[in-house]
Image (cartoon, rainbow, N blue to C red; front, side, top):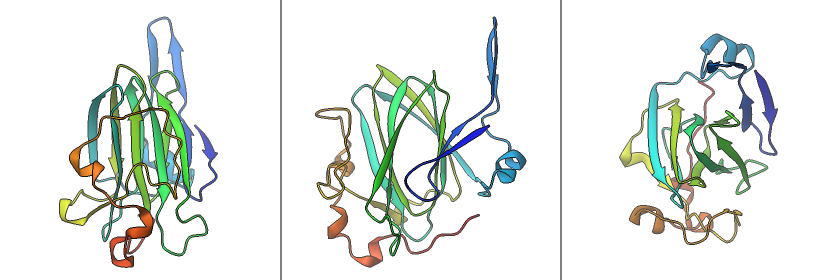
Length: 187
């Protein structure tokens, strides 16, 4: 397993060991002890699977009082995955980092608590899997407008397909402190 730091503290690209032969390939998508030995100590309590068509953009989402770390990966297709630091007081508050995840590169992205998360689909379809360190609570959901000009994410899609909810999120500068992540913890 190879771990690649990004420009944002705690946001990590993970390249799992892949064993390939003429039959195909095998890889461990998660092994708690190996990840813990590498400094990734989150305990994941919920797994989610998303299927989306080309041009779909989901996000930018986060939990306010019950922040979630996420370990994300693409099972089929290709996406551009984005994390935005929304940790009050962080040196990189409001900064973003993006990475392409695909069934070909088999990379994962570890998104720490305190980050908003979103992705857009680049292939005809994509199956996207993610582990969460806290259970989803719809009453605790926060969000940022995907096209917030102050964040200036360089999305590789034009005119994305959005949910009504995602179209209506405010810009980061419009969020009062009580609508930002309240606390972060490592596990």
